[in-house]
Structures are given as structure tokens and as C-alpha cells.
Length: 304
Image 1 (cartoon, rainbow, N blue to C red):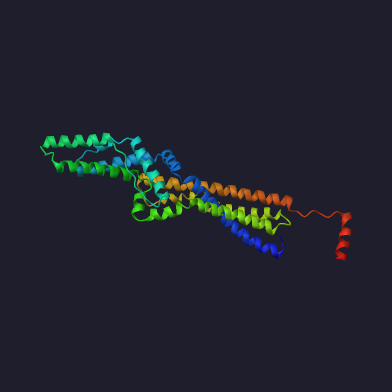
Image 2 (image 1 turned 45 degrees about the vertical axis):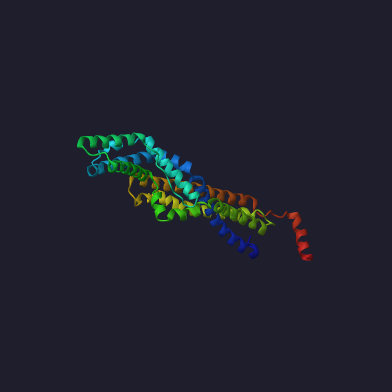
């Protein structure tokens, strides 16, 4: 291990292996966690749907004086199950857009109870005031329904994907997300390749590979653990700028979850590193030359 011909290359490869392991850990966490099914399940467990419903109710209560439509017309006909359905559509459409070059086009499902309530309110109002039910009346009614679906969709867009889409960010993220398996393969493949290089360099003493891989894994694990632990302990994500309850909860809980998973993987990598170093300590020791063999070994060295 101390020969220059093996020591210097081993250091270089070991450093590269640290970054490969960190990249592999991050890529694997992203592959496992960033899926439509996992995100839908996560949102339900964290009660994001309840906050989205509360946001809808608050919106219509605040708008009631300006529109003249009682908030109850909306809130009495928007259930938590409906909000959950809309939220799931937006999440699945988000991942579909990430897979297919940023084409984000969610459609809020029809709410027949809500439409019937709006129909009744408009018709009752027209009958009471003598307002003519002409084409203008119908257009106003349809515009109100369309606006209701838009507002519901905005409140259920818990990751503000519509905003990202309008600013062109979703398309950029799509280019990265669609290549996630390739990036994971490159990260993991490079780690395997570097380990094979170490095996070639230390082909005469393969036990040295345990040492170099162990050191790299330990350093990579520590690099992953320290910032992750700080982000969690300091509650860093609680300073998130957007304060809409459903958006704040969705983003902060998702970021904490990803950070916790990455830290867990980093701990596993660090523990693996320690184990490899311990294995090296037991297998990498030079075997002592028996006393009876020393004269023969010295004679052989003299003859050479």
C-alpha cells in the first residue's frame, strides 16, 4: 500500500469514489422517493388535503362580499374526498409532465353537486330580482363554474407546478428527471468501475481494497450525514418563503423526508466503511515469517 506506484493512484481513485458514492446515494433516494404513487401516499399521510380544503374554504369566505355568492354555495359542495381526487390528479399530471418534456395539462374533474348549487343560486337570484335569463346570464354562470374549477385546482396544486410551468422551469426539470435512471446508472457504474480499478492496482494484495473502499465509504457517509443532520436539527426548511398552508406543508415535509432518507443511506454507507476497515485490520496484516524459515529467506536474498 505504501509503494508510490500504488499509493498515489489509490488516493486519487479513493477521492473519486467518495463523490461517486455520494452521487449514487442521492440518485437512489430520488429514484425511490420521487414517484407519483409515493408522493400521493405521502400527501395523504401528511394531511395536505385537509389544508388544501381549508385554503379553498378561506378563499370563498374572503371573496363572498365581492362576488355576492355565499361561501356555503361552494364549501358545502366541496368534500375532502373531492379535494383529495383533484390533488392526486395534479400530482400524477406533474410526474407525467416530468416524463414527457414538461407537458402539464391537469383537468379538474366535474363536481356535479357544486355545479347544481351554482345553477340554483343563479336561477333563484334571477327569479327574485327579475334578471333576464339570456345569453349574458348563461355566460356569467359558465364563467363562474370555470373560475371555481380553476380556484380549486390552484389550491390543490400543492407544489405550485402551474407556476413552474409558466416560468419554463418544469421543462428544465423534465430534462433532468427523464434521465434519472441514466444518471443513477452512471453514478453507481462509476463506483463499481473505481472499485475494479483498485482491485487491478492491488491485484497482488487484494485485501488493500477493503481499506481504500472503507475509507472512501466512511468519508462519503460523514459528508452526507453532517449537512443532513444540521438541516433537520436546525429545522432549516421551516423558513420556506411560501406560506400557503398546503404548499408550505407539502414542500417542507417532502424536503425533510428526502433529507432523512439521504441521511439514513449516508449512515449505512459510513457503517459499511467502518466494517470494511475492520475487515482490513484482520485480513491485511503481513503474516510473520517463521523463525525456521528466516535463514532460508536470508540466503535466498543474498543469492539474488
